[in-house]
Image (cartoon, rainbow, N blue to C red; front, side, top):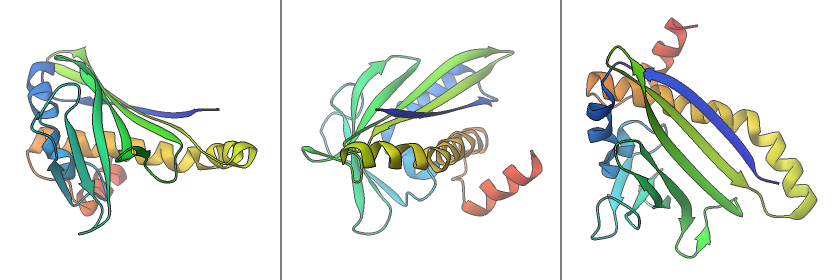
Length: 167
């Protein structure tokens, strides 16, 4: 059974301005915690079929390929490694969605959907992981807000400080 974790946050930028940043899929390392580098691996830099590697270290990466493109609103990416799903998942996607939030602000909704392998054990494990995945998705949304509003890559210290200040 698929699991989904979703987080929403308000970004203090007009949607068109936020979209100009989001559409550049080479920027993920500036706002996805734990990602140190992003490399576009297709000639296509945006739209369905554009693909990137996101690195957690110099050699550890997952591939993300755009499977849906909603101009001005967002996109969906499939997490994988070549023809295989990104470990440990049987299937996984990340959805980025922007909506107007009024007063020149943007509502960002991030959703990570995943399905685990291994039958009943995988379903159990997927449910057990949901809290951790939810926290991770919330951190992505928060780090994106910080990066979009300041123009500075979000560091672990900046993310921690922001979370402490808004509790």
